[in-house]
Image (cartoon, rainbow over all chains, first blue to last red; front, side):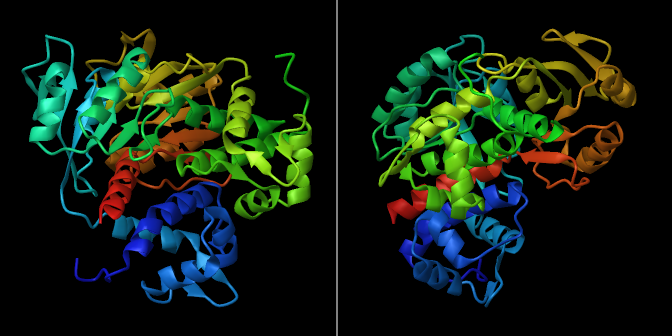
Length: 211
Length: 211
């Protein structure tokens, strides 16, 4: 951990923003970007970007800009420096089951430490090393275990209701695997993972190239 | 389908690019964007962007720019207009199993029509309505069924080898659920889905806001 420099909080706050845009650029096959272009894209002024990046040493070359892959690699490393974070999984259907077995700890210090479902056949059991509680216990368990991040993998029909309960329980971040856009207070950060749209985008792109 | 206007191929080719950037903006909570900003971000000149958007009617307002959510909704609709696309699933472990049961057809016209694995307990059977073939038959089946898109959900250790085989079989697009960045010819489009990094970004953002 000693290799990672101390950075101002404002800089830290902008890292995920840079990171996500760089992932976008990399997926699109872009190899470099100037601080001016980056500034436009993430809507942070380019002086701040250059200052932010300066904390990490000379990542860019004058007149060339920044190398997308190097930046990505660098940010990925920084983002992974945290201590172990316990998260909750809500909904242990097919996707939930896969997530229980997904190796979040491989490169990231994340562990699903509690799961919730309504199915009496699995509540009260331990699956893949993780206790599965009845959703009725969700608010209490989340508070007792001081978990503030949840992965939402419930059926679409109960997604909003479950979100409301998570918000009530004090959850601060939700990774949403359901296809609906959830409504929650601004203080709750929601990250959407829409697999169907991801796949559709890939298909559409190929069709466009074919014609 | 009649509502969707005929658009030039060059425009069609840029849609997924716009779409993905708009998803990024929306996730970051941005509500509007000008064609100049969009031009910088996706590296398409702003005149082309305005022309592209003009095919869909007046989506932007002079002096205001484009509304992110409206554009997103619009593009999502266009991207979903395709006819049924059959895709292959390679690797029927936990994630693969979840994907077999994931309802890609709900809003999207996508169907997993063939799955491949090495596990003799499941090859030769039908799971969730989809035949599971031995990977040895992959090249033949993909060609016979004229499938050119694959979802890769194999273990990390065999990801590159399997990719090579998919490329040999003539696959044109891969949705990559493994954490490694695959190497493939430029003609093969790869869409990465890195769940651990998605979750880590969410966590990092919350930590940054907390301090």
